[in-house]
Each structure stands twice: as C-alpha cells, then as structure tokens.
Image 1 (tube, rainbow, N blue to C red):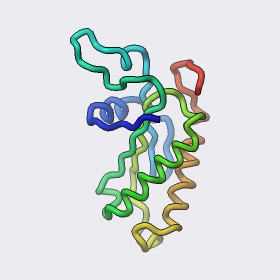
Image 2: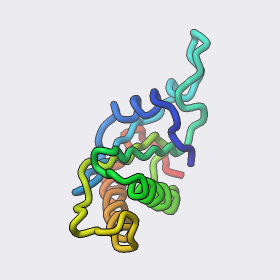
Image 3: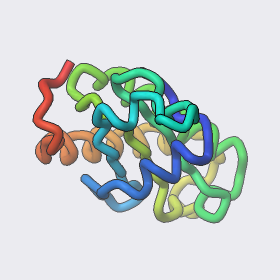
Image 4: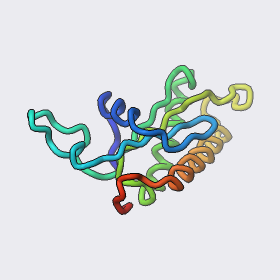
Length: 141
C-alpha cells in the first residue's frame, strides 16, 4: 500500500466520489486509470507513479484539536486499511474525519476507548465501501 504524500494527490483523490460515510468519517475514492499512472506528454511526472492501493488520511485540527488525538486516529486509519488491503480496489483512497469525537465521552486525548471506537467505525466505513465496488471493473488484489 502506497501513501498519498503530496497536496495534488490529496486534491485529485478528494475530487473523486465519496463511496462511504459513517458518523465521523468519509471515504473518497479516485479510480486510477492508465492516464493517472502513466507519464504525461509534457514530461510532468504522474500523480500516482505505480498502480496499486493508495491511501491518505485527513484529520483536520478543526475536528481533533489535540495532536495526540489526530495522530492516534491516523494510526488507526492506516492500521485498519493495511489489514483490509487485499479487499480494497486498486485505486486511490482518502479517509477524512468529518466531525469531532465528543470530548465529554472520550476524556483522554488518546484513550483505549477512543481507539476502539475509531477502529470500529473505520471497519464499518470500509465494509460499506466494499459493498460499493469500484467502477474500474478491475479485479481486486
């Protein structure tokens, strides 16, 4: 699994369709075709150098004020996606936090309870996305 690193990669993937939503997360997918992985005629390198599963995580400070919480959520996103990588289509994906976790319910910035809640919701998110296949028609890895 490749990670999205550049702003243009994130912007291109976010411009793709939203394939699943849960209470706190949204999953965006960009179908990678031959044009997104092949070099452009003008000599500009492609956004996605190799085909495969690409993943990015967006956890805005607006929805998770503490850096410890943002990093814990990102770690959960990458861990769950790595475990489910064989089930994901060979496209680019961005998991975006779209609302805050209640600080009254999750007092600690990085508690086990918060991590379990995040993990459970991410599993639900990827399950919903799996129910909606990629329009690329390619076989999954």
